[in-house]
Length: 227
Image (cartoon, rainbow, N blue to C red; front, top):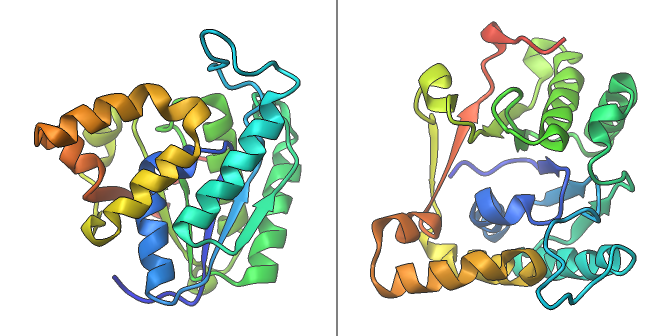
């Protein structure tokens, strides 16, 4: 992995980073690259309140805030930014306001790499709003000054339309850190950790892929469709 000047990770929800990029984040940090994680909301509208309930709508934000801090610690992140937006409302935020927020982060941090979602291929409205804001902010910069933009995509048509991921990161050396990051978000990940544990015990290829490889797409500026 190439050593970066700084990596800026931008996602809307606590645990977005855990599933797709936590191994990559830990690898960058272990390589000596500083990483800033800007998490836009506290995931207060998360679906999982437990059965029987372990949380209410009032207490869930506090629980998820603690989990986010614990996840950052597991990855080695020292610069965690909680941006104060409300879960499931980002699609209704002013587009320019969101892009300006990203621009301010870029101006402050001068990252050589930004990691976020790929617009039109990240399913959830909050994911899409975040992805569009990141693209708008980076697009404002002169081409020669733009940081690299590596994106997560997981809609059903993403590989058909984007092709195969062009960035493949071997996260085997930080496998345990990825699992600890997933465990940190236990209020939302308990359901899948049980399945993951069974799969790893059985050497299931799909389970092993979860903790050994992370894939990204470089943003294709020539096909930019963000308004």
